[in-house]
Amino acid sequence: MTSRFEELFSPDRLRQNWQSSLAPAVSAPPQNAANLSIHEQYLQLQRLVVEKFPDADKLSVIFQNLTTEIEATFGTDVTVPADDKQKQTIVRMLEELEELLSAMELPRWGSQ
Image (cartoon, rainbow, N blue to C red; front, side, top):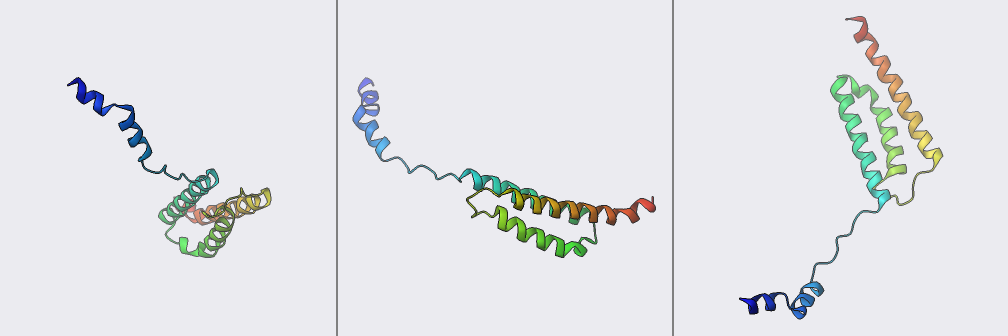
C-alpha cells in the first residue's frame, strides 16, 4: 500500500498534474464588475416601477434616455471609470424620475 501512495504523490507525477492543469479563469476587471452591478440595480429599478405603476409606460422616454446614458457611462465594455460630470447627469435624471413617480402617486394618496 505504501508503494501506491508513493506513486500517487511522487514529485514527478504531481509536477505533471500541475503542468497540465486548466488555464486560470479570466475574471472580470473591477470596473466591469461594478458596471454589471449598476446594470442589475437599474433593471431592478425598472421592474419595481412597472410593478408599482400600471401606467409606467408613460415614462418610456425617460427610461430610454436613462438607459442610453447608463450604457454610455457604465456599459459592460467601458474600461475607465465614469467622470463626475457623467455621474451627475445620471443622478439628475434619476432625481427627475423620482419626482415624476411622486407625482404619479399623488392621485393614489387622494383616493385613500
